Amino acid sequence: CRLASRISSSLDVEITRVWALTDRSSNLNTPSIHFHPADVFDPNDDVDTSETHNGESEQQIPGSYSAKSYNRLMTLEERVAHARIATLVHRRDGDWQKAVELVVGYIVSSAPTLKVANHPKLPPVLSLCILEALIAPEGYVPINNTENEAKNHLPDFKSGETTKGWFYQQVIFLFDSMSQESHKSAFKLMQALAFPVHVAGSVWKERSMCIDDRIRDIAQVEVAAYERLKSSIDAAWLKFLQFDEMTEELVQKVGHDFLSS
Image (cartoon, rainbow, N blue to C red; front, top):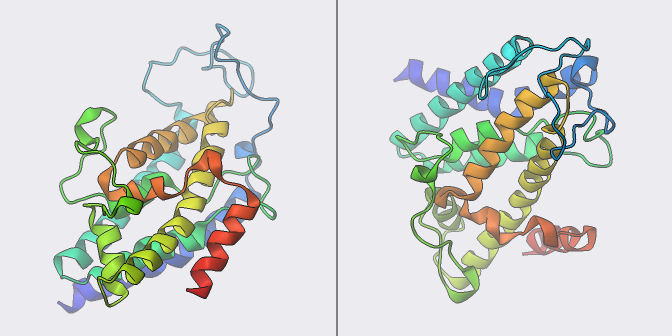
């Protein structure tokens, strides 16, 4: 209907453009979330990580979050809900191209700019929670256990296997053919998309070690989403580019190969 179309169109713009612009400006002008490498705790030491920014110690229940993080957590929860609504509306309407564009547009607009943004002092704009909401299958519940892990082994592209997740399959279809050449083009696109996701995951992990719970709480939520994504069939394409194997030369080659294909 017309109302659903208007809501969907508005959410698409928010997800692929507005959120990234808003967060880049907000992060720069919010000193309370600026992380400094010296403000970390040693996991091997018996340190009370519930210590507040003012040095006052407070008991924190495991799995709970500081009240100072509630506003940011609520904003994240709201965006996850909006992302979920947007992607499911497109999928139920059979508009898989729009669903794919949402994922690609979100990653491209929020990709970490390593030589411009001051990471890890500033948090990544790319949220793994939102990406998970955009990619996960209908009925998915983001629980940190084995229920959502892939039951089958991850695919080996070189041996001819493909993912069973909808995203990678729909990207192949967008290349108009199921030929080997289309698979290769889709594979290169997946590599290019995997790079900023892994970079964001790495930065969130670094920030999750901060002693300030205003920084640590959000980071821990994002890291949990990152780990769930890596074990998900729908995000199996993240395995196409191993983070520990990435170098500047490799990333440049991946980008050049994709643009020239």
